[in-house]
Length: 285
Image (cartoon, rainbow, N blue to C red; front, side, top):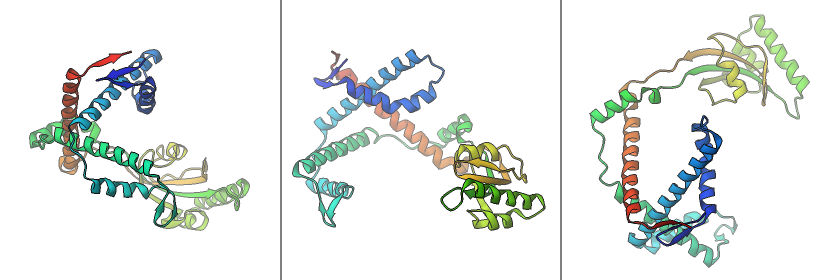
């Protein structure tokens, strides 16, 4: 199925591409929705996104002032830096390629300026707005659980095979069981001995999943047995733990202001696009 928006044809492939762009986040949020229903809704939302994007592009092209060539050339020069070159000052871009890039840049700048104009009347949130957001979104603002971890690791590579790595990490564990200080054992055996193996405060997801599964289930002061991740053999020690916590308002005030401003800008753009839709001719063919 294809669409036309004010006479501009939108191929189905464009909607499919938008669906694939949205799919990872969409499927993570709507995991409980039946698959067929989920797919239907995803395609419908993708279609709406494409329509809105086309309407904004059309309006920006129609109403936007021409961008000075000096500004376009400066932006093009930045783009050139991303292309492979034959020499320090030569970039393999044909005149056609440069003209197309300039046209894309001009369109991008026109859209930026249009949306800035749409959002120009968005006001700063009041103290009451900030306090209400804080009280209503404490779970969103909550800092994640953190633990401070030290570890001893033996990598497996061309210098150290699995048997050798396993033998060395076993020697390290034996010394720890006999009362040796963790930091000294780390400096003696670990492939990452800096600071006695101290990794600092970490949250879930900072390390690989196999590491998280062990250390986040340990008590403060506990030393693990030998365990393996994709990087090799490890022994870990949990040195401190900071539970989830709701920070004071003053600590997150700037973050709240940014979130409220983003919500208000998004609402302003949504209202503007809704207005464009009421004036547009949108047909399915």
